[in-house]
Length: 619
Image 1 (cartoon, rainbow, N blue to C red):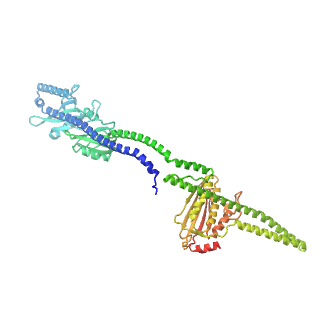
Image 2: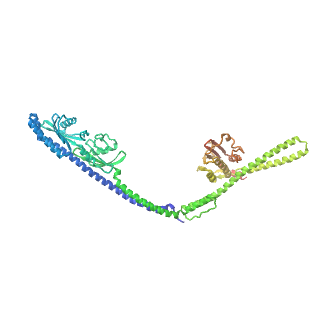
Image 3: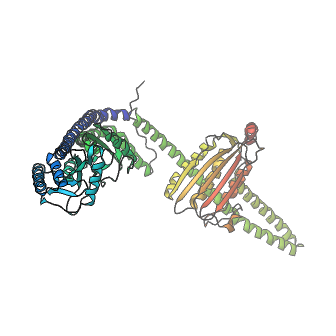
């Protein structure tokens, strides 16, 4: 037995190795390795940048605290306090100048300091120096708070929150420490006013990619520096996005780590490190997309390789198509010949794959089409014969009736004339003979009694649809069939039922000269129209989308010779009604103005009468 070879398998055998294998192997290993490497290097880079910046800030803060301790422990501060207490003006002035010189040395050595000053035990300015020189005057409101916090704070030390920038200065931090006299009596407070802008620049200079940035939290989890939020506007208990809470809690724990999170619809990764001197925490956050830029570059290269591979595949597919699709081209050429009316074509089968099966199916279709065309021609001839019969009967019977009426009148007027009596009998005889001829002619055109046999109604519907495919296409009509698979074989005369369906289809197509849709449906009703009827019922519906029937004509559509068509005989629906009723069924037509007509044929099942039906039909 010859092994069946699939075209699909043939194409895959060439395309899959060329396309899928390079993309999967190169793409998978390159992208995965690149993503891992990028993530690892990015974290290391962030960690290094972060630790360097956090260490620099921590050193500045530690140096500030050390300088504050040094200043608060200067003996000259106690000497100044004693000189003031004993009203020694010369000594007081000398000690002031000494403190100013010390402050000047600290300012010159540390650019971070904006101003150094001392407040006495009442919080009043005692000695002060800034970059412009010494200063004095009434205490400022923030100095009073600094004095109070330092005087009441633990170990006399106070580290203020960030003071917003003012007209004469930028953002500021106050670091203050109380100093005492020899008797442990509060003598005053030493204050260092720090230029926080220098610390902020250290944080703001940390950049990773185009969208990465750094931010700073204090020991309470409040933001000190953040490019999107003003200082102290968010904390770990009041966050703009709940997804930030794990990050803020991890940062205030005092450890160094990294964490993935989502903020404002973006997946991000943050690396954070502590600033131990004030228990602050510095973080650098970067969108995950930035981390994967290198991986995206590798992915781009993989796509380029894939594009080249696709070009090679297209070339190979073109070569294959020339050899594999020749049978298809033969089918196309044969279809064109069939459309020109040549139904005698037979295409040789050259392979055993799907194309060979398609060719065999095409040949069967051509044979069925030729047979269907013959049947359609025969059906058309029968319809024409019916129309001719009706016309002949109409044209003959009218003169016969007139002749018969004239002879009756003549016989009454000349009843005593033997010649009239003799010839009237002859004329009556000939009129009766012509009437019998017309009657026999009409009986010839009528359907004969049904010859019942088990038949597949769904198959019969398919045959009728095939008959009208070409005519429907010429009229722009689309045909749909919805068969019921539960429909059993029925006792019927297939030819007569086919004639009924043909008449209904002709009416439906002619009702839509500008095109439309015809839907033919079969339905099996197990209990018929009555629940007590267990014979079952087959229902056929033919629905069109034409303009419908004029309501004034609806009551007359089953009347013989009633027609609204110029070339109609008015016998189609009456003959169809007679055929359906001779099968014990019912034919109904439902009209819907503007949305078409639905014709329904109900045929009862007669499973127990097949034998008798067949015998009666043959008799």
